[in-house]
Amino acid sequence: MLAPKEQPSFAVKIVALWTVFLLGTLFHTQLALMPLFHGLSVLAPHGHVATDIGEISAILWLMLAFFVVPLIAITSTCLIDSRWYRIGHFWVTVIYSVLNLAHLVVDLTIPPVAWYQVALMAFLFLIGLLLNLVAYQWIKESHGHGHRLQSAH
Image (tube, rainbow, N blue to C red; front, side, top):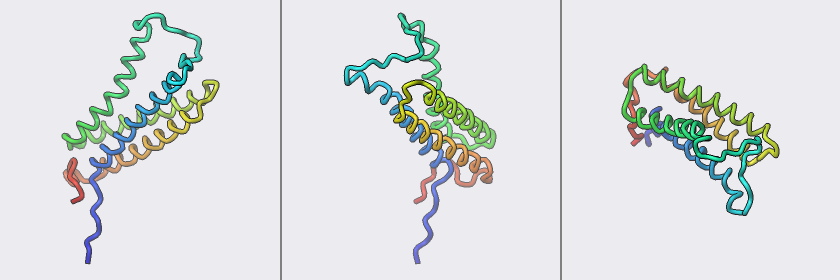
């Protein structure tokens, strides 16, 4: 008789979900730039046009931080298995879900609505909720069980 297939550890699931989230984030940016390849403008419709890179420096740093935090979470999840890390990681996932929801709402309010971006952001929001759930389950798991990135094999 075959043994039932063992489930991947919570750490493996978390790394996979963060990776999907980051790939979706990259594609969100790529989708926003695609009009350039068809001779169209990608200027933001909010009315402000930067004349110098310094004017958007804060935005660039925030975008970098938004991308680097999940990279740190992926790396830390591979290396750290403390209860305090699990709790902190869970709250990071909650913050990201709130930010993704806010971004989704903003995407719905900027005319013309780019429905392909809204669809992607809705998908990323759902991935974030799944990440919240798995991170919460990881906290509830008894410490030291299913440690880090042990495979199911």
